[in-house]
Length: 128
Image 1 (tube, rainbow, N blue to C red):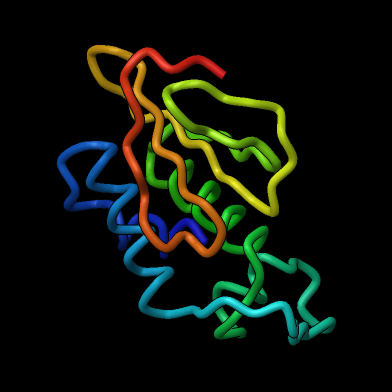
Image 2: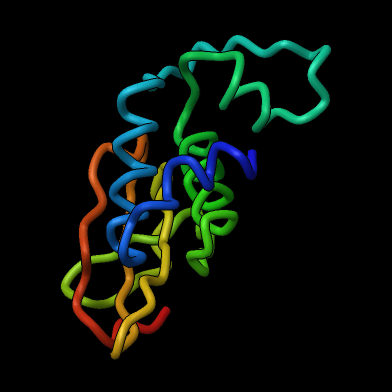
């Protein structure tokens, strides 16, 4: 996983570009499904998803994005089940949501929902 993370992020100048690169790679290589195929001979489900499967559900996308970004040097947190809207976070259950801090002069967060279809940068100073 580390090799993949470094390949995706090494030439990116900042954290936002790394988030974009990881999201685009996941979009290009994987699709969303709730009909999971799992190779149980591979002990790590995330390794199976990244390197052996071509589809997964939102938690696979969110976990993959978080791990790849952390390995690529972006401090990232995986948060499941929070709605982010109007600059605030509500503890309202949703199917999936990934929240990733983007380092900069002020705290900024990127929320990537569901199948990591597109990161949305939220207002600076958002605290969850």
